[in-house]
Image (cartoon, rainbow, N blue to C red; front, side, top):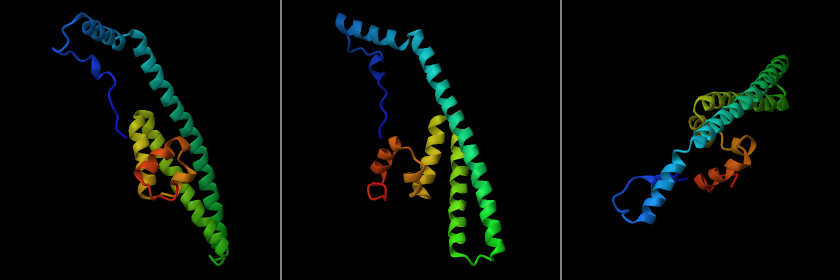
Length: 156
């Protein structure tokens, strides 16, 4: 996905000589330098980080639950000497849930500082190591971007 700077039109240029072009350029400059847009940008960044903080708190709870379930399933497997196939399969699922919660925790922690870097980190993990996790973890609004990257994936 290509990202374009929509404010490139406001750059100064020697091509604009007539009045209407000069008015357009001035209007663009005023729009960029509007003090309320700085306030809006600050509020947008603040609330995005607060949203990531809320998700981090929920992910911490998920991680605690994953650790508890992993400990319980591991102890049951040790008691049965890993003989039960259902318990082993359940233990593998809890290991996967623990790994996913850890990756999401790290990505959300990074996203509080730099949202783009945190999202990139989580996308990198799910695309490289856990493609099935895209269906289970990644929000539906981002699944379209994954479909563009991997058209032959199981979630396409």
